[in-house]
Amino acid sequence: MYDNEIYSGSGAGSNTSGVYSGGNAANIHDNNRNAQYHGYSSYQSAGSGVYQTGGGSSPEQSAGKKQKEPKGRSRGVLRKIMISVSMGLLFGMFAGVGFYAVQQGSQQITAAGGGAQVQAAAQEDAAETSSSGITLTNTSNVTVVDSDVSSVVEEVMPAMVSIVNNFTETGTNIFGQTYSQSATSGGSGIIVGESEEELLIVTNYHVVEDADQLMVTFIDESEAQADIKGTDADMDLAVIAIPLSSLSQETINSISIATLGNSDTLKLGEPVIAIGNALGYGQSVTTGVVSALNREITLEDGSAGVFIQTNTAINHGNSGGALLNISGEVIGINSNKISGNSVEGMGYAIPISSASPIIADLMERQTRSRVDESEVGYLGINLQEVTAQISSLYNMPQGVYVLSTEEGSAAQNAGIMSGDIITEFDGERIDSYADLQAVLQYYASGDTATVTVMRPQNGEYVSLDLEITLGSRPVGSQ
Image (cartoon, rainbow, N blue to C red):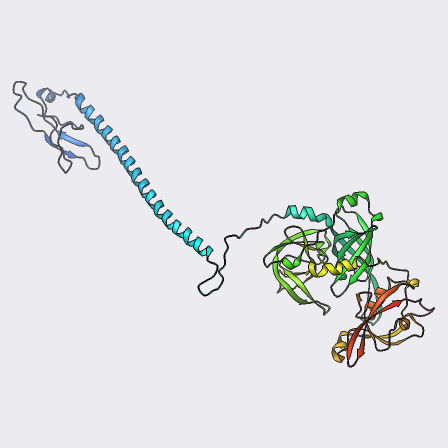
């Protein structure tokens, strides 16, 4: 009888099916060594991978004594394990070499293709025109501007001011009664220079229009009262002045004078910065780009102007503030914003190249402050308004129509005649009697000014500038 024992067979030789032949059949008698028994055919246990062998056993084994596994068999197992590990390592090494070779090959292919692309791109960049002579775009030198403008703002902010206009608002109520009340509006300004006695600030005309009092706030939060030095209503520009003697040394040390740039060199898409007293909350900063140049816009009062268009946010209170290039130079004065639910990102600024000559002229004007009512100068005319409606109907300039002049009056002495239409007074646009009254509040009797009239000649109106010395108001006259 033979005892079947499960173990890993050590017999040599395997067929293609993986079934091993007997595992060293034992001899029944030592002296009969040639009588070899063939072991049972081994088989693979289902799903276990353990082979069972039916190798022959000796009579001692049949007596219940198990045969010890020879050392050679354990060594064979170890050898197989080592061979398997070695084969695994070799497979990994060869696989790694293969992958590396494939990668290098693909990189060489990509490099070759990339080189062709670079060469093609270089040839494309080198070509300035197409075969038909059309210029090709070339973005090889395109640069990106950093959105951080804090250093520019820090440099120019001391040249910016906030302006508060305290004025008297007049009107007519639903009962036809006239009324007047105190009102306040806000705007911005730019410090553009100084004289021996004054600090000079440019702003919009509509920011200081009809002012009873102008208060300016500087970067150190100090305030000072300003007077109007000169205005140009057509260009919506004004220069106001503050006596240097009214400023503390701390304020003088904290402020600076802005650098005016050149708006003629602006390009579409060029980055810009707007600084101003938006909504009266104090100085704020917005950024954008130049959207359009030489944009002609009709303003709310019917006048037209040529502006820089930008998508920089410009709100009420920004008027009179600076539009800056990325170098911190003033290239525009914010003046108007089209608002409404259907319009976004469209702000406008007066080009500084157009404004600079006017600003220079206004800076040379005599600074004027409101005079006492009893001292206001007198023209000596009887008048009638030429409203916008009358102007349109009868093709007449809008302004103040002179019905007649008083004998010996300042108007008559200046050469003003019946039929003349006063359109400007010392550079201030005159559209109504209220405009004329407002500007006269800064001129006392004996002051001289330039009056611009439109005089009909040969069927058309001709502009004339007349020098006038204002007289004193007669007792009892209005």
